[in-house]
Length: 293
Image (cartoon, rainbow, N blue to C red; front, top):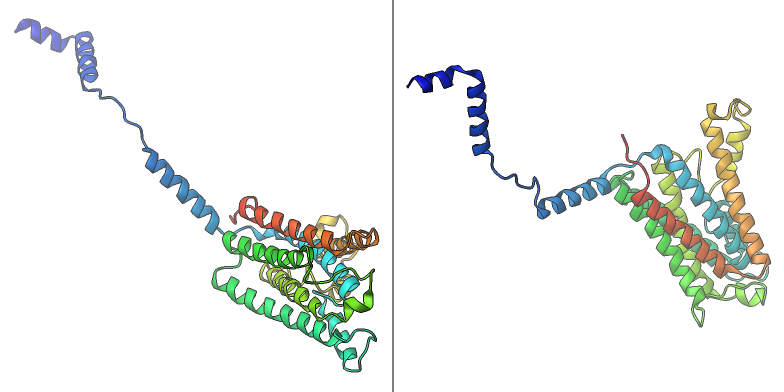
């Protein structure tokens, strides 16, 4: 009894006793998460990433690439089919001329321009309403939007690349035969539709006034009328910078298309180049565009 009391009173003996008790109560640790739990957490992270809203502050970079693609497509379409697929002001003028059988040698000018204008309008109409329904700045919505534009370019590229092309493209061989072939209208519709999707995307990202993608008359006017046009340093006037970059981008795309056509590589290379760029943009939106904070 005395020995027991001494053990209870001695701090050293009491510490050893507690340590022994603690050791006897230790149980083997178990993993904090099972493989199923880890897989569930991973799926949840992916789902959250896909449904997050992207930071549209970096959306201008995406749209500059779209401007380059638009330059490619408008240049090659006008050179081969005598119609624009994005710049509908020019098409409106050609449409009016076609009522008097002008320009000469283009019996389908009325049909090609009308199809381009109508497809463009429908593209804007449908894209705006669908994207607003599913939140336009949501990563998945934006990625599917750009992917749809890519597929529309792929459709035309496939039609002109087939072993027996459904759509004629080379205006250098026989321009008259090309412009009198009604099948060119099948290639104009999907390209004009995706142009409408592109400008709708720009407007929904809040950059339609600065990066209109397909319309540059208003951009030139906005630049010329900007009271801070020559403000320095450059970072102080972001709207001006975006407008200038948009003009340079579309000019660059048209210039590249011009020299590709000049080297007789033709419309095939330009269409596949445009489709490839848009595909890269869709992947960029999906995996690289930062989320909104």
